[in-house]
Length: 366
Image 1 (cartoon, rainbow, N blue to C red):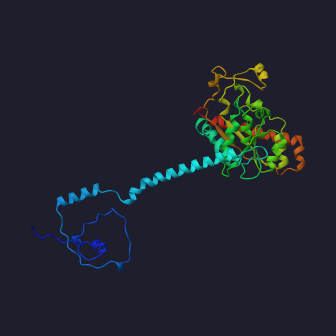
Image 2 (image 1 turned 45 degrees about the vertical axis):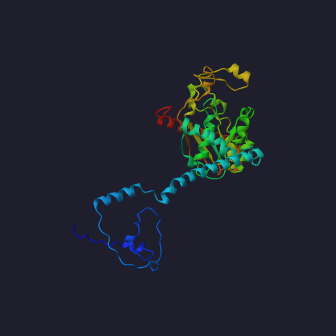
Image 3 (image 1 turned 60 degrees about the horizontal axis):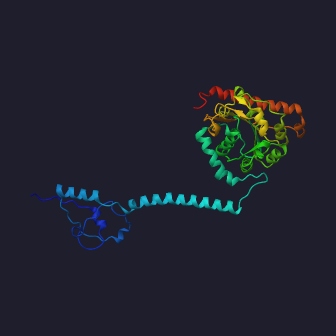
């Protein structure tokens, strides 16, 4: 056999830690251990030993050993560390949930003068409404940047849908999409606050009675206030009159905004009209129950509780450009002609936006 060619390995010089040649020590495979760093003075100098070239069979054995070698310590720790991260996040959520329950049971939480519970709203009530908002009605929000980042403002929206789900969806839209994380305080009808359970939940969500005094207090505190001036006339109108705005009352919301100098933000909601197509109204039954109307729809009351499930329509909520009111003198709030003109301006802007959104809509459900 011919003389083998000698190839010096410079790596072996840096790996030596004592006397002796490399042929007497087992070879260390690359990638199977952690790297160590040190100064050049600490490495003893030794003579380079020649290593004979191996045959093909030896190369195959070495490749087999490398393929079956265990992973390094860093690779071995990767999976447990990932599991630890998941477990740590789960532990934090469990700890947060237990702390929340402890505060609820001990009464260690705050509500404002109107009964608004910010912690319960953020952590529980919004979490319950969000799947309906995102998955069921698939709400698309436009123009949320038109809502002021701070200070009081009055959001005026159309009202429809037989049940007031549009107000709740508008509340989620502001809560989840406004860049300043603002919360919307809705003005609700008297009926909301006489119904059991609904009364408590409405207060916790920040709703309050639809009266000028409460609205002015909230605006003076720099809150966002939502109002739907159509009231029961809008929410209880027949399906044949869908997306036709009803009368906006006597303009009380404009007077409230003028007194506080708060801007008015028009809001148009498309999609709510079709969730319960109201084809009839059992007025006698409504009077017996004390309701403003008793709806008859294609599914309710014929299908019982199943008929109360809303149809999964596709919604769009658009916030228009704000209408300023801070340029008017204090006595402007008592000027009936000014209130009429501003009320008509807000109503026309909402109606025009509704028509525009309806033209753009391709389908009620998709």
